Length: 82
Image 1 (cartoon, helix red, strand yellow):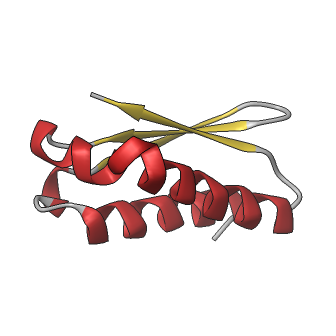
Image 2 (cartoon, helix red, strand yellow):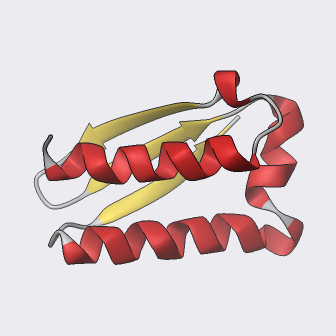
C-alpha cells in the first residue's frame, strides 16, 4: 500500500465513524506533485455531523490528516463536498 492511500483510508475510517449513513461516504484522492487533495462526499444528513458545531469535527479531521501526512512527508488538503 502506498503512503497516499493511507491518508485517504484514515479520512474514510473517521468519516464513516461519524456518519449515520457510512455506506454513502465516498473519499477520492487527487494526487499532485506537491500536494494531495482528499475529497470527502457524504449524505446531506451526515454533512452536519462531519463538519460539527462551528466546524470543530472538520478542523479535528484536518488536524489528524495533516499530522499523518507530515509523518509521511506529504502535504494534503481535505475538501468536504456536498
